[in-house]
Figure 1 (tube, rainbow, N blue to C red):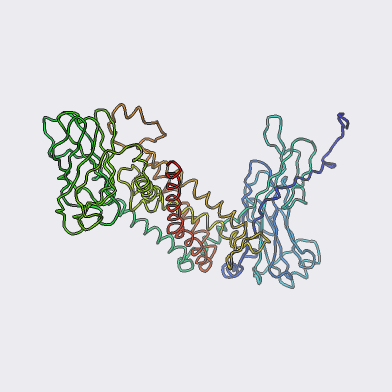
Figure 2 (figure 1 turned 45 degrees about the vertical axis):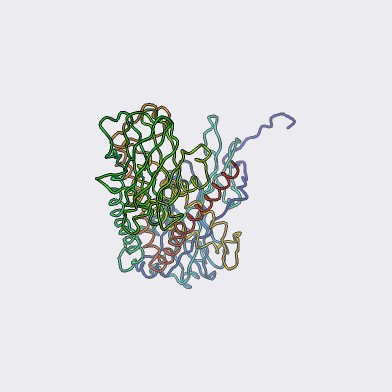
Length: 597
C-alpha cells in the first residue's frame, strides 16, 4: 500500500483464491450425443457403458465432466478410474446423478488427482426405478447386479483446465496451485499458496474411441458402409495410379530435345526452339510445319520441324528442338511459319500459342507470340503467318499472360485436375500428385469423422448462427471446419512440397550463366522420394484404421449420414471452389494488366 510491501502468509489450509476469466470470444463446443440403441444391442453382460478421456499432459490438469440425460426423470451412476477400467470393487471415484437432487449433473476431478496418469476411463449406468429409489436415498456406493440397459439417450461434454505460473526462467509451473471446483466455461478458479503471474488453460476434448466396442463389433455385415467406402476409395486410387503411370511415361517421351533432321555437319551455331501447342479442342496437328527465322545478320533456309521417334505438336504439347546454323543470326526480327495442311481430318489444323527461341551460346531468349489458328476452316482461314519478335510490352499482353497463367493454375495448381493435365516439364509426376490427392482425401475423411459428433450436435448448445433462408450455420461448425481443414491441410502441404522439391536422379547439365542467374531454393535429394512415399503410406494406413474404428462406433446408419456430409464438400471443392478460384484469377490478372497499362 502506498508503494510499501504488505506481508501476509498463506498455507494449504488458507490459500489465496484467484479467479481467471477466459477469453469472452471462446466458442464452447456442444455436448456429444450418445445413441443408446447401439449400447443395448452389444453390451449384453456389462453393468456399465465406458468412455475414454485422454489426459496426457506435461503439467497437471483438472477434468470436468458434464452429463445430461434426454429424459430428466432418470437417475444414473457414474464411476471412474485412471489408466484402467473401473469396477465396483476397483475404482478411483464415483457419483450418483439423481433426478430428484441435481438438475445439471457434473463431475470435477482436481489437478492433484490426475498427476502421472494418461487416461481417464469412466462408466455410466442408467438406474432402474427400483435402483434409483434404493441408491439415491443413501450415500453409500450402490452395487448393481443386472446388466446395463438404457431407455434414454444422453449427452456428455468433457473439458480440462489448469492453473499455471511463470517461474524466474519464464517456464510454466503448477506447484502450489490447485484448480477449484467452481471452474466453468467462463473462468478458472485457482487456489494458490504464493503470488506470481498466473494463467489458466481450457481445452474441450472429443470423446475417445471405445476400443473394446470396436473390436467386438468389427463384422463386415454390421458396418458395410464404412468398409465399402474405404475399399471403393482404395480401388479408385489404384485405377488412377495405373492411369497416371501410363501418362507419366508418355510425358517422359515428350521431354526429349530433338535435333532438326535438316541440321548440317558444318553448322557451328545452335539455337533451341520450344514450341507451345494450344489446349483447345483439335489444337494438335499432324501436318508438316516449316519455318524461316529472320535475324539482323542472317536468315535461315526453310527448315522443317520433325521427330522420327515421337509425335510432335500434340494438344497441350511442349516440343523442344535444336537448330544448327553456320553462324549467328544476330538479333531476331521475325518468324515466318506455316504448315502444309497434310494432316487427316481434325489433325490438319493447328493452334500455336507461342515459340521461344534461345541462343545456346549467349542464353538470350526471344519470344514469338501467336495465339492464332493455322487452319483453313477456323479463324481467318490462314495456314501461314509471320510473327515479329515480341517486345517487353507484348510479352505482358493480356491474352498471353491470361492463357499462360490460367492453364498453369489448373494444370499444376489444382491437384486433382493436374492428374489429367500435368505440364510434362514439371518434376512433380502424375503418380506423385495422385498419391498426394488420396492422402489429402483420407486425412480429410479422418478429421471429419473425428469431429463429426461435435459438428452434428450443435443444436444442443445455444450458439450464434447465421441463417440464409432454410440454411443455417453456427459459429461452432465454422470453428470445427477450420480446425478440420488445418488438420488435413498441414501434412498434405508438407508432403506436396517434398514431392515438388525432389531433385532429379539424373543431373541435367545446365549452362554456367543460367545456374548463376537462378536463385537457389530448398530441394531434397532424389532418394527422399522413398521417404515421401513412406510418409504417404503411413498417413493413409493410420487414417484408414481410425476411420474404420470410428465408423464401427457410429454404426451403419450414422456412417451413411457421415459419408454424405464428407462427400458433399469434397465434390463441391473440386467442381465448384476450384473453378471459382480460376475465375477470380481471370479477374485479378485482367485488373493487374489494366492497372499496369
